[in-house]
Image 1 (cartoon, rainbow, N blue to C red):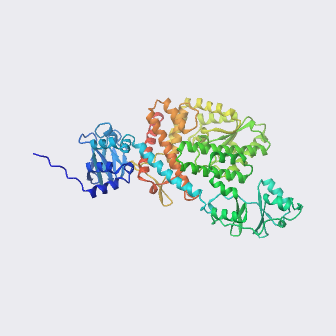
Image 2: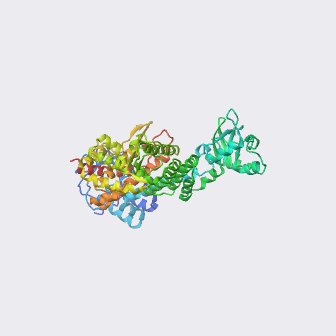
Image 3: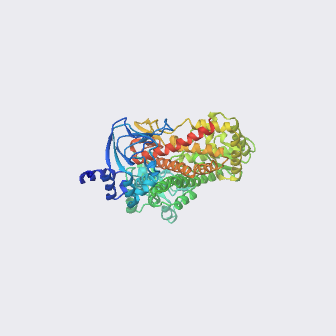
Length: 630
């Protein structure tokens, strides 16, 4: 008996199904005929809630399933308490098909599910002519990661373009603080103020605070020197007036046109009758200067607070520029930390010099994210002093005073003061070499869990300014001491495991309610967990490295972890760090936690990636639990 041919779907139905698939990875990058070939060979099936889609270990016709609609779970018999959550767009059981084995998990429909079943032989035939499809089958995770990075790069490119746009309102630009004097002030006072503050202009005001004139360095030659005006003359006699101003709502283009038309180099910004800032010609054209050389030079030449603040802003603008270039998270945070190191070193050097102290006798330590060279856009201060020795109470107070000034300047430059007080201006963070050795020994041998919670950031120390000769021996002594104290490591693990990954028992992303949205904290529930896990593994293995990536790589090698697994650790940390940078860049305002990830704003690709990366992190936590809490 002749077998009847299977009815072929109509062209319109195929086109509709192809269009639906091409909204997802990897089909959006495949040629239309290749996607159509998969659709024509496939069958569509419906699975009611609670029904089995695929059963573990059951042999049968091998099909690649594409979940078109609904949600499902995959649960393995060897880990019944864990489930992998599947959403529309996911393919399964791809790993089993590639290994030519029966399904290793039980797949259950949670909702009304519609699946497209593609015969595996046909999927492999299409892979022979479609490089995109073949690459996806072999490296699905990398394809998803590339798609996510591409989307983030495009978003940041648009943001960077806007930030360099002349259409930006002045309120969004870094407008430097303005120095004002009354119009009754004499020329001598004005010139002394300009010299002391290292500024190029002074705005002159009436008794009611209204700005009426300006005097710049450019005006001095013609109006004062060549005119032979005495320095006792009131500045009102030589200032430029009437004063042309702009409002915070005016754009950078408005400022450029005003300067061009009137031959001006400085324009005051006025809000509600008061001068709030001063915009210079260099500020405007600096919008187009985006290079590490330019930013570094600005930091090294900064002397006074306004210049330091402008340099700090330039670092953040440069970060936006690099995000738009698609730089990897590890490289990007390393560059941010490098530039912030330069800024901190400049501030420490300036303040120590003003106090008449030499940095040969002390070293400014970076702790926390800066110590790990993993600073992001939004970061507070964690720092300390290590001093060779204190010659009495007065010497310690001198270093504390310098630290207080450094902390205050860093705060003014956009690095908030540490709420926990972990700053060099705190006497507990300003210690001699011997005092630091004793402090670490106390933490390792006697500290309570509460002390460990506060002290963990100190184990990420790194020299930034001053004499770094004592830091390496201090790190080496810590590396030797920790592995011999299992109770200390156990306490670190217990503290670490108090925070689990944001996945529920079904393997779904589980956020928390905040400001009317479901959010996940990418620091506390993401990169912070990787930082803690890497720190524990490194300390347990006697590794002195502070970078999370270095710690994971070195610890993985010493623990004889398979290289693919270590690479999965690194990929997970990097991806979460990239998303965190993205969230910080797009935070709506200062009142919002800049590490929040709103779940209603992420794509299906990011949702799948996040679940995969957090499953990787959970496996590391399980490893730590087995190694230290049994």
